[in-house]
Image 1: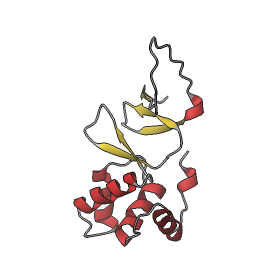
Image 2 (image 1 turned 90 degrees about the vertical axis):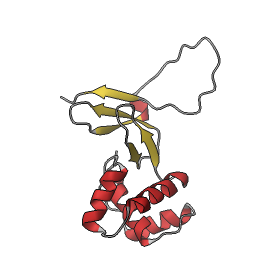
Image 3 (image 1 turned 180 degrees about the vertical axis):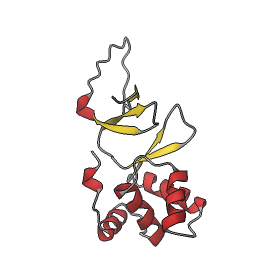
Image 4 (image 1 turned 120 degrees about the horizontal axis):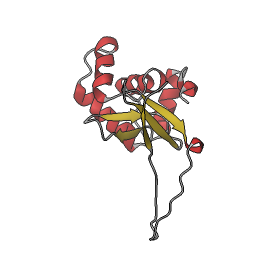
Amino acid sequence: MNSKFQNISVEEIERRLKDAGVNPTTQRIAIFKYILCDADHPTADQIKSWADKNFPKVSLATIYNTLNVLVDAGLLRELNLPESDSVVYDKTLSEHHHFLDQQTGHLIDIEGDQIRVELKLKRQLKISEMDILLRGTQN
């Protein structure tokens, strides 16, 4: 699912930010490019670790502020996993679900059409979205 993000240019990142109404600062471009091209459901701490090696002098506050801006602009999704205190950031905005490998902690995207859910509810509920988290291990 993530192969479509592998080779996005800095110019494309800048265009996406501008189209979403986000000022394309150097830090925002670098962080967004890392998330889109190299990271897989990263946490803020993982992004900070990458920044320390590749983009010195970016504070954790800058990382969090950038992530909040990207989420608010609809460029990333924020996922709160029940097993973790950390929030992970998802670059895939299309309908999809997740599989959590309980041995490795690796989160895998599952296309929305690969899961079918049939609700048998006694009352009418207006559902705006559904997130499914499957847990197990990979063979």
